[in-house]
Amino acid sequence: MVYEFEGRTEKEAIDRAAAELGIEKDEFDVEILETQRSGLFKKGYVKIQVHTEAVQAPPERTEGTARRPRETQRGGVRSGGPAGGVEDFEQAMVSFVEELIERMGYGGTVSVLYREERKLGLKIESEYSSILIGKKGKNLDALQLLVNIYAGRQGRDDMRIILDSENYRIRREESLVRLAYTVADRVRENRGSILLEPMNPFDRRLIHTTLNDINDVETKSEGEGLYKQVRVYYKGLRIN
Image 1 (cartoon, rainbow, N blue to C red):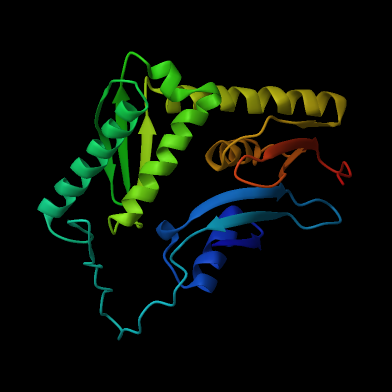
Image 2: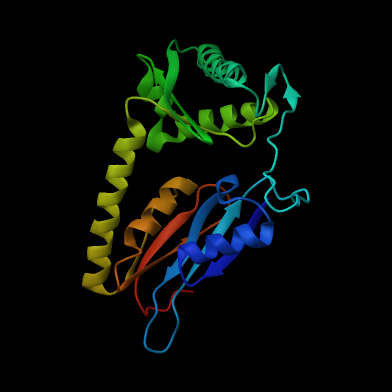
């Protein structure tokens, strides 16, 4: 499900989304659609888009009682279970990605890169890494989407799987930050606007967040679907 919220700051918009949807902040993905800083005659605001599948009202509970973890059983992997269940889940994700790239005709090995509370990072090592990453990371994004769908079918739709190879994610992030500042300088110089190439939600959010503190530059997402474009424009410039 996709919802939109606004607030004076990104934090306020996220807090409002969590309160109105009745879910925790780490149970949804946030995409910044537009940022506008306050001026002499207008108030600043941040518009976000929330992506989540957990929009069911939480069960009633008495004060001081913690919500019990889910223990649904799907495909032999238990969600919210003991340490053994976590290890089984990780191995299932590793095996799934390895089999996926093997069926694509590219050999390689997959290992756990990092573990966080609701996030699991997997690293692909292959002599075909450049192909698996693809142009602007689109192949890697597609593989990541498939493994996240598989994780949901294993009863772990609360877990986000991040795929990386050859440290692409870090290199991409550094490249986008440099791009954001370069574009911002050009926009401030000509007092116009620049429309960037289509990007996935994570990359777009990075552009928005990087430029959020620049007083005379604003950003907004344009387009439909997963890959939208970010427009960077001079503050006060009318954008249709």
